[in-house]
Image (cartoon, rainbow, N blue to C red):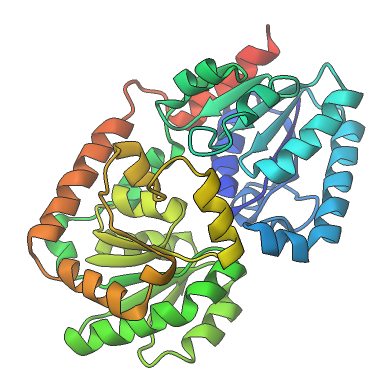
Length: 376
């Protein structure tokens, strides 16, 4: 059996790794090829090209790299067609992956195409659901409300498998009492463009927090790919966090952390599962803000908040994401108090919502859903 898999960003890379492990456990000898990052490569997966070349978010970064992105779409589609796999699994990154999938479907109409983590049609551009039907056979949903949404919008078949991050809860979660005296995590993003936008603001926030609460320890987990950029960034900060690289160091930091300042993204769900009170920040260029305000149909951006339907983690966006405001909000959670207790109560409810109800892990369910589709 041949599976071609495409992940276009760090969160998708982690999902891809879990799926590779589950598929190999169920089908010894399965051939898996495609595009992925460090996590997938660690599973003896050979990526067609470096994943970070397509790990772009926002209109301006994509336009700045448009020629290369279009070339990579063409290269990837050709590679899938040449491989003639039994299934193409596209993981998130819809702007890139759906273009590849459409081209593959035209040339290889019999290949099953699975979308692992579908586009957020429940948040904006709901018409995308129906448009996916001609080239996507199955969506593997990670949020419990998504199958109903796709059915209502006329999208492809959709099955809820659970959120794969729940598989990592034991590696992330520490003791609540011990975390009260742990470090403050500083997480300015997993993309170079996001780090550039938030870097100075996060540096100011850390300096202000340190002045108001002296003696705190700060830790900044990052990847080896971003280590050089992060080092250059914090060289300009008045208060410099300790940088840790790699998943094991990151997990250890999450288990110990008393609080976190984080860019919006999948990391906010990891922080919620680790029971770390968090302040969420995000900034996009003004043109993207203008577009988003007219298209996005939800009023929250952090994944824990969306899943719970409440503002579990405070979100400071755009101009509100400034050093003074972030430091003040962080001050409310680094010490014990009502805001810290409120957040811990909320993330407890989140764990209940995402709990696995049987013995199968989400990655295992994803693999089983793909195999079921191939045997129809």
